[in-house]
View 1 (tube, one colour):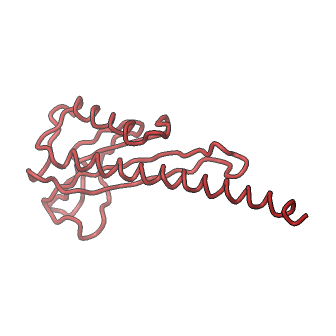
View 2 (cartoon, rainbow, N blue to C red; view 1 turned 180 degrees about the vertical axis):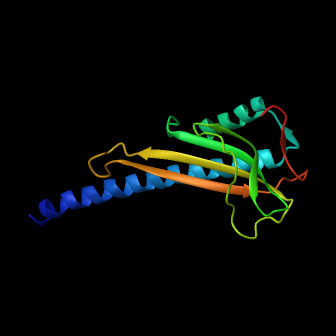
View 3 (cartoon, one colour; view 1 turned 90 degrees about the horizontal axis):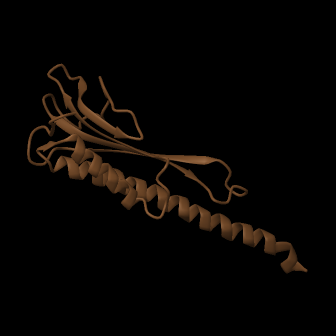
Length: 158
């Protein structure tokens, strides 16, 4: 009799924990994807639109086994001017609009005249078991990396 009372609760708890683990794994893959894209671009001297498209294609591989229809990725090069304002030098997106204009970066990250590679990703995770976790959860990540080999990574045809 007691088993009949607690069995549904235990089954729901087990399924909920399994689903939480899946959502956590999707979040970690999106985070890893964001850092990898920034790292690849930060190692370059100059990138092209075709190279950036190839880099964005890595996202499908890194997100496996999760579907990538709701994955949005953006990579930008930003520079803090002598006036202290951080502006976008170039930006490309896949599933996200490119950035333009002025951006905000964490304090103390760069000084005037320095450049950063800003990588951003969003991923909408939808639970396959909508009865326990209804709706969509959006994960978003941003990574800032300094160019490795040059002062500023250029984009030849952005």
